[in-house]
Length: 417
Ligand SMILES: [Zn+2]
Image (cartoon, rainbow, N blue to C red; front, top):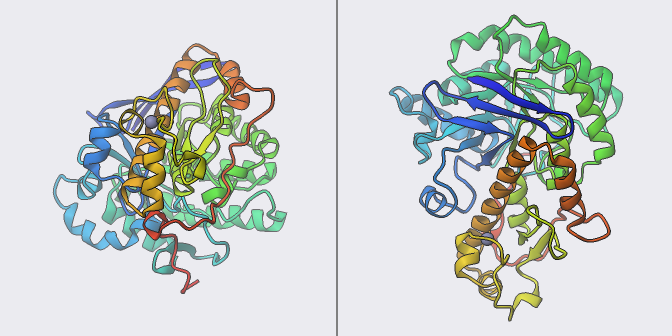
C-alpha cells in the first residue's frame, strides 16, 4: 500500500493519494469506503450499485462480525488469484477488513485479557489473537485492522479505558509478531477512549514498532457504532482527535470508522483524518430517512432529512431532492417511495439507498474539491446551518415505526448474548 500526501492546508485538512494494490487504481483521500454487511452493500446488488450508483473502483469495508462464517469457504476460494472482493461479487474492487460493524451498536462486555468478543448474527464468539490471524489469513483482505478492545465511549471510567489500552497492546504484541505470515497491510489500532494519557500510550506502542510494521492507523473507542456515532459530542471528540493527530506519523493514512454526522466528518477532515465509511447513509436509510442536506452552494433553506414514511409525502409528486441526478430522483416521486414503504415493497429501501449513497458520495467529491481550495470553513458553515439561522440537527434517532420487516436490518442475534 502506498500513500502520498498531495497537500496539507491550515483550515481544511489534507489531500492524499492512496494506492492499495500495486497496479491498482490511485484513490484520492479524504476517501469514503462502502460499508457492507456480509460482503454486500445493504439492499443493493453489485449490478444495481454499478449501474445506478457508481462504476468507479470502490474500497469495500468488510466486517468480521458479519462475515466470520465465510472464513472457511474463503480459505479454499483464495487459493487462486481471486480475492474476497471477487467472492462477494465485486471483482476488482479493493477491501478493508474491520472487526466491528459500524452500522449496528456493538453490545458492551465480554472483553477479557486474552479474548476479544465478536458479535455476530449467530451470537457472541470469542476471538483470540491466534484465531483472528487465522481468519485474516483465510479471508486475505487488502488491508486489515489490528485486534483491539474498543469497548469505550465518552462515559467510560478511567480504569476501563486503561484496560482497553493494556489489552490492545497484548493482542497487538502477537499480531505484530505474526503479521509477516499474511500478505495484507495492517492498520495499527489506536484506542484509549477520551483520555489523552491513554491515547498517547496506545500511539506510543504502535510507534515503537519497527518501520514498515503497519501501513496506517485506525482510531477506535470513541463510540460503540450504530446510531451512537451520530450523537458523539464534538466538544469532547475533537480535542482528543487533535491530541492524537499530533503524535501520528504524517505519511500514513488515518481511518475513523462509524456513522459520524456530515458536520462531524468535516470537522474530523479539517483535523487531518483521511478515511471514512458510508454507514451514516445506511443508518439514515434504515430509519426511513432520505439525505437531503445541501453542500453545494448557498440557496434556499434545506433540512437534513426527509422521512419517506411521513404522510406529508403521500401526495407529493416531486423527487426526494430536486437537484439530485440519481436514478431515484430522476425517475420517481416522493409519493411513490411513500407508497412502496407503506406496501412493504423491497424496492422502497433499494431506491432510498441508491439516493443516499449517491448523495453521500457526491458530498465526498465536494469535500475533496473544498480541501483542494482550502475552503473548509465555508463548507462547514453551509452544512451546519443549511442556509438558515441555527445549527441543524444531523443526529439520527431510531425510528420505532415498524413498517415492514423487509426494510429492517438483521441486527445481531440476541439469544447468545
Ligand atoms: Zn437522488
